[in-house]
Length: 193
Image (tube, rainbow, N blue to C red; front, side, top):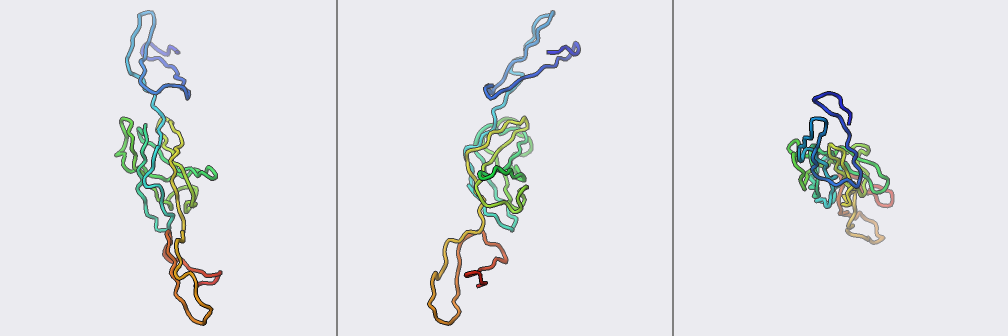
């Protein structure tokens, strides 16, 4: 501790991964005696995400936001949230915290965020794939979550009919699935159908 004046002291707290979260007393000792202020300094636990609901969102150009609830522990202050690709580690920002009501005074166990694939930074639109959420508290505390979140693209689940006879004619085909956007085109063997 460096004595900078008679009314203020400056010091440093070194935190490591072994530091136990909690409240700590601050004690000042000098020639005049000792003064202690109990629970004056807090080490926050890093926020953790244990589950995500829903577990995915369709990547569409409709620019529709999905409300996602993150359940875990240690969300505090005005946290930032981002997605990280499990394939190449790309971090996508642009996830909006929607239900904190401003600053979270005490650590909470749920956080509501809004995910709009078209608004995610570093990928426009977001690349379909698997991601993890990371919540970063204002103090910098963060741990990547184990809970997975999927951004899906176009997905074909069924083709009806799946076969037609070799007879001259026009045969309507229905392709069912998800993630299709307005203006999508259907091709059969490379030819527009």
